[in-house]
Length: 533
Image: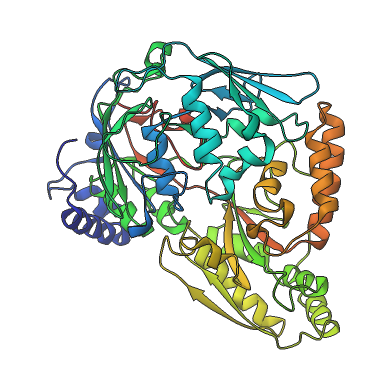
């Protein structure tokens, strides 16, 4: 790391950059971090990627709630930090033979009856303390840490695999029995978030042994983290980096402040900008906009709690869906650079339902449904927060939509990182904003909805759960899509989710930054293949 983290200095420069950003591209171009002048052409790096250098990146943080224990970390920054620090089992890769790009695994074999998954580890993967990665480390990471996590995304392991019967078969093989036959287990284990730590790990700390691309050297919750390259990273032998000598991650909640840090030269990459900020940066030759592409789009949604009246009435739920002016949200908040949603997550993934008609904007029918349900003039508070760009703005418009159908709606905006910080309290809210990261449709359902999970907000439909399980048990893709589509149609008709917009992650980087997108986990970028030119 080039210097210790200096939050005060960093925020001051970021604020100056934000002022320049607001003034327009000409002022951005004229001002560098030290006050000197530079032309866009001089600022833009050229040439081929080189080895070395420290890349600095800014993300939405979670303040004091940030933690090194990514199995229980509630913020995107926790996972971004962990992916730089620890190696993964693999990442989703639609272009690969199995639909995944393997990490510390050489491959995954599936039994013909879909009852057993055999994980084969790469030889020669070592932790920074010199010890070899073994099946015991993978078992500990999955069967103890992931299984004990309070976060829905990590429940996928125990929901699908009988971890109590998981076992090592030698040092380089792990046998995972399934809870029920599943054909898509590779897509679960290789989503990019199942990371590996040493057997016996209970506490996460700076300097702990890792087999990831970087070693953590400094961390302050709500401020940032610093890393140095792990020269023994297994990916180096495969031509997969890391090329960077160092990495700095900065925690900045405000989109304009993140963009200001980029424009002032304090960082090289910024994640998840607001649409307005991204449009301003696009006029500056020194920067490239690198938005995520379908299916790696984020669903912005609102969850109605079916445990709270009157959301137990399907007429009320339908009214709240019909009330959303989706086109206006796309045009007003995202200037058209987003996609209208249809109240189901995972649009663009192969298992997303086909042929489903778009739910209309119909405030008149919505008012009629509320009247029939005896819910005219109902009062509700919509809780939201700036967990991803556009989330608060879309919620603000939705409150106005609800008012137009006679609902006495109001907005409660929490600070960044606080909406999900107390997840148990969040799941008790009557109406809450949320967002869905890009994950296949049936996996998304199982993560958050199946079995009446707390994150399902009162949705309890064993019939739909059974359809999802039946779909995932089919190795015939056509049959799986048909059954999975039926499950999603029932969820669309009766569910408690309003999902009006899919938006890309609007990221920006300085000229000369390459390779970040090659890490594949586009919603939470990794840096194992990043480089400076």
